[in-house]
Amino acid sequence: MIPTRSAVQGVAALAVHEAERRFDEDVVAMTSAATATRYAELAVAEHRSWTSVGICQAGDVLGLIDGDVVVIGQDVAAIARTVLDRMLAAGGEMVTLVPGEECPDTLADELERHVRARHLAVDTVVHTGGHGAALLLVGVE
Image (cartoon, rainbow, N blue to C red; front, side, top):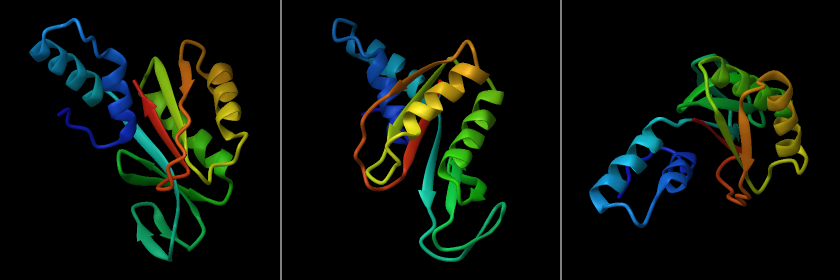
């Protein structure tokens, strides 16, 4: 059992899994990868609420980093770019995007182009999610 707080941390752990490695060494490597992965998500507010950056209204798009709301708005792509830029300002080599069921079809491609244009040494990988909990999950390693 690898401790994670987000599905993208689980993806990072699986990426370093080696079946040939001793079990305890594999657990350490997978746990290290998971904990080194910062995570974010885009969600839609269900009702009016107070957040750490102000009041959101039902239907607002929320950008959360490590579980905290950092940006509120209406434009999904703009919120996603803002979240990515904030996360990558602290560094990173790999961005993992997991679009949810309600995510606009073109968003992942748009974000890949954005990362390539603004963050030259960062790779991006997209995994089809289909989950209903969030519009988009983001991991930065």
